[in-house]
Length: 225
Image (cartoon, rainbow, N blue to C red; front, side, top):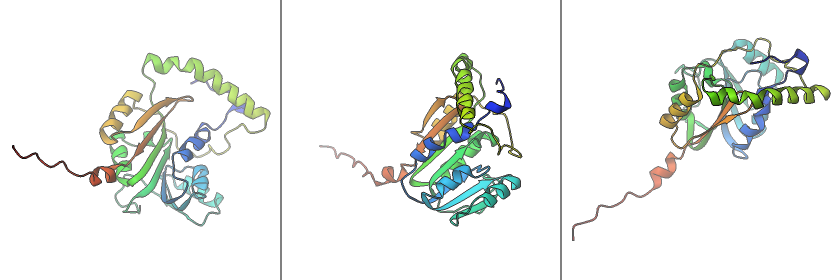
């Protein structure tokens, strides 16, 4: 990735916050944010949910996020999502969000764990990173690179550029390709929708429709005439 001048850097994750919020019900009882980082998304979730659990493996990020928040309906949890001892709600969540965090964990394990945490009727919304491997991946840079610079210049002209909260943020390069993520999602999250996005991201949306399947009447066998 070509690095922009420091003055033109901007927050790609925040760019996708509106998409994540649009996938959630107008009001939820319980929401989980995985890899909450500085808590920017959590603060918005707290305005739309009765309770939010915010998880991050970095104690520094949890300290930063919790100190910057005045919300009283957020529980900040420092720990690994895949740790069975992590004190998550055993009944699950109406919505689970994850932005730039899935690639920090083994793909199959994290998708399975995320699916287990979504209540029937609930939604999982992910914004993630993938490893570029195909011609299509690299060809997209022809659009992404100039768009990235243009957005950075636009924000800089309005005094909104920069990434002041990146200090201490854990960084890891993605190892899974988009096709590998798509295959894993098809296996673990049936009916999910995965789309390639600009700015080196993908979005993954899944709704837990198990309650609908369970309510469907079973077909009675036809008796021989």
